[in-house]
Length: 329
Image 1 (tube, rainbow, N blue to C red):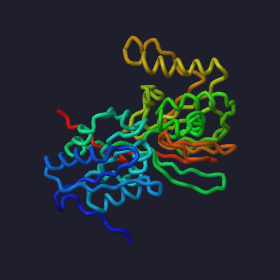
Image 2 (image 1 turned 60 degrees about the vertical axis):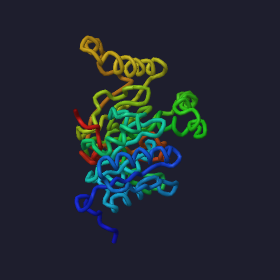
Image 3 (image 1 turned 30 degrees about the vertical axis):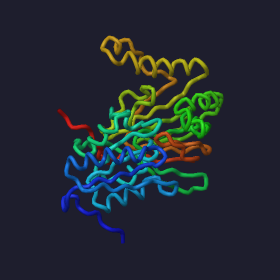
Image 4 (image 1 turned 180 degrees about the vertical axis):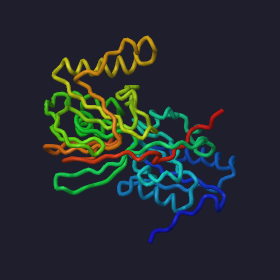
């Protein structure tokens, strides 16, 4: 039987830091945390390093068992996702110290990306806010099933293939520039996804698309707003189906996403100039989605490739995770 978490109220509070040793300057971070714990009269912080064998789920369980009042995550999107998987009951808040190239969740929550002192101060003195989690069960080609959570988005098609085509060494050196070559390679792939889908446990329908994206948040790096109505706490997913017909279709998607979502939507006058839904890009909303594919396809969760899937079932867990935000004035 696993140990039961110790109530934070039973002793002086303490924090636990789950960190990716490749992503952080550990000495500098420890100095900032030590100052914050002293200023706020907290017990000594627990430090838990991730590894290839444990990217964060097990470390999150250790943090809970230690009685931590907050779990601070210092790492990239993969570390944040893995720790969130271990904290998905929402009882203990998670604080973010963005340390990767994408930092998708922090960007979507408008949290600081490059101020470690503010991020640590938020962990010790910030306010709690609950956000939704995505729960996904992936069916593999051999019919095996794996279950995961995601915080930002899951996808098949363009984004998943782009990740599969990205050189990992180049990504470490050049960050998001590494995706340029991968994107060019991916766009030459004319293969479409053919699948059946069900929204909110309704009847299955057959369709095709170039890309499926199930989003809890709407923004990508470089302030690209793919799903402008997506919200992290509305209890729903925003789902995008990209269905371009040749070059013209891609131009329509580019104009819709970059120009209309990114520029026109910001003002009342601009919103009046926006076009209605285009055939190349369809938006729907749902609490649950099931997809059955004709053939195995690459799938990604929060910017990390998760291999091939023959299908998946995804549902939203409302208020499934608690995040620390800077204290209000």
